[in-house]
Length: 216
View 1 (cartoon, rainbow, N blue to C red):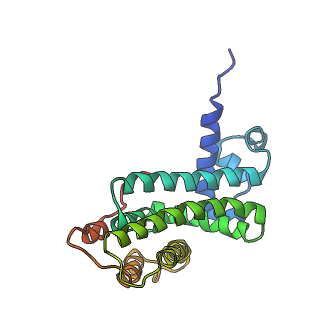
View 2 (cartoon, rainbow, N blue to C red):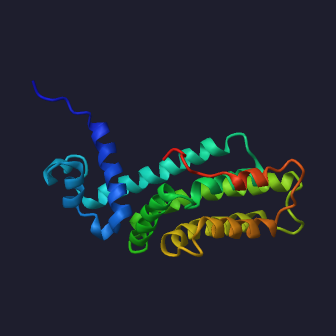
View 3 (spheres, rainbow, N blue to C red):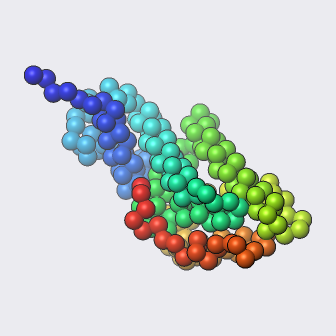
């Protein structure tokens, strides 16, 4: 009797293996031959799921972005304003080994996107989601009286977006400026330039949290 293959599970398995190989070897080192070897398949066994290397990479990056966003949504549930921004940081900043590997995959994708407008569309969609969240949270902080007079909501949200995306690059290449302590300190400095901290803020608690053991 032929073995029944769960094709959706097989696709997920290949995407997970691809993310691990890209994190370890980069895009150039993530050949279909190596991916097949890691999965224990022949090269031909990958083709029905991902006919090209680009199609596998796109699925891998989509998976990583979706996984990150799912964690963010769980983490920020019930939070508003600056508390939500600080909780968001716990899932985006490369503060542990798992998050650092995730950042390596994202940075590898950016390198591809910089050379291909079509590839970059996935990043545009990702940015739009993060931009909307950050804008909403800064606007909530403003409505709660927790933003200094004269601060632009849109400019603050864009600065935060630039910081979080840049932090992933720095975390990958710079063990000093990209350390968890340094990145948290940079974020504190950035937000403290805009924020008026009220008695109800959970800033201290959010900063002290660790992502160790968080779902990947």
